[in-house]
Amino acid sequence: MTHHVAKLVFWGVRGSTPTLERDTWRYGGNTPCLELTAPDGTHFILDCGTGMRMLGNRWTRSHGGNGIEAHILVTHYHWDHIQGIPFFNPFFQSQNRFHFYSFQSKYLGPDSLRQVLEAQLASPYFPVDVNMMTAGREFHEINGGDKWTVNGTQICCGWLNHPQGCLGYRIDTAGGSVVYATDNEPGIPQNDQNLRQLAQGADVLIYDSQYSPEQLASERKGWGHSSWLEGVKIARDAKVRNLILFHHDPDSLDKVVDGFLSAARQEFPATWAATEGMSITMSERGVNVEMRETRVGQRRRLRFTAIVSGQSEDGKNFEEKATVRDISLQGAYLCLNNRPKLQSEVRVVIEAAGDPATSSSLSLRGTVVHFDAGREKTQNGVGVVFIDDTDPARPHD
Image (cartoon, rainbow, N blue to C red; front, side):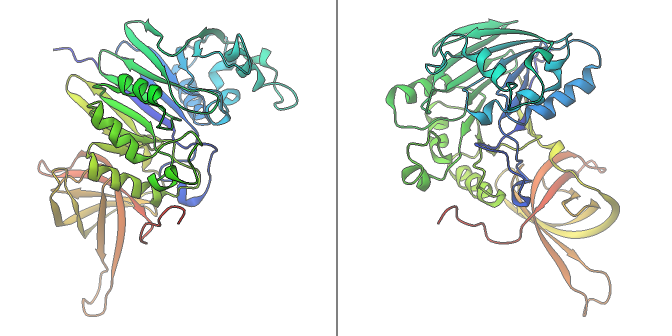
């Protein structure tokens, strides 16, 4: 049986402005950019934030001198969704071709998308002229409610509630369906209805979860964003299979996003927090979330034991003695009999060698970022990233 597999990769997940703080590295600091590859190999790019630079470098290496063709869906024209345009290497290679889609802005008039692209390279803001972008470019003006097909993949869009306008997209591939709904504030009935229609029965809903419910109801009301709680409501109403919390606030440290994820999973277990390097595959077999590329750092191969406790995929608490196969200052690779849920928290207690009466143990908190088959048939290889061992701070008390 032939399986139709679509793959989604997150290259930028942060909203508003890029972040470089130490306490935001786990989820990532680049602004929105996603890559979707349809089962037939057609490439789509969702937004052009700073994550687009890394995507461009990956494509340049993997394609060599072969031409690249892709369809770029832009939600709106705020800086965090377009500021990666000048740094996307494939735009400067003549063998490539790109199809851009977005709406006509009332502030710019006809040909808004072309104006926005060219303005990113206008003097005196950028040293390279737009004429250096030698790749072929086609611009398609769309409106809320429009539907079209690209090589068998169906796309439709709807208006969301965000200052100066924003489009949400639904992409239906032979492998599965993705709804990309960033930069949306609930409360406008027509927009709320648009979103639920887009999201109905989707395999994956990527949703704006920038603020806490408390922030959304008070000091951030009217800013055009949403919360994890609203995402859960939409996912339930529309019978979505997986919810991805997205567009993390630049002032939300990783432990704040951890808190949002934990709270959302209490209400809708199939929830994930978008992380740079995270990938999602969709096929007739279902949806699979992986975070293989999020565990980076200089590793040291070794072998010792540790006591690991956490919660397995079926929701049961576990504690077992595990083998640590390698370790870095950022994380470790463990061999476990249990299979903890991706992005769940585990405790790793490493016993120091020596006299048990005088030796101490090292207790570390970690979040699960990767699975593979362990060396033994009954074992799971589990990659964890260590996290700050303090209680999660409440955002903006």
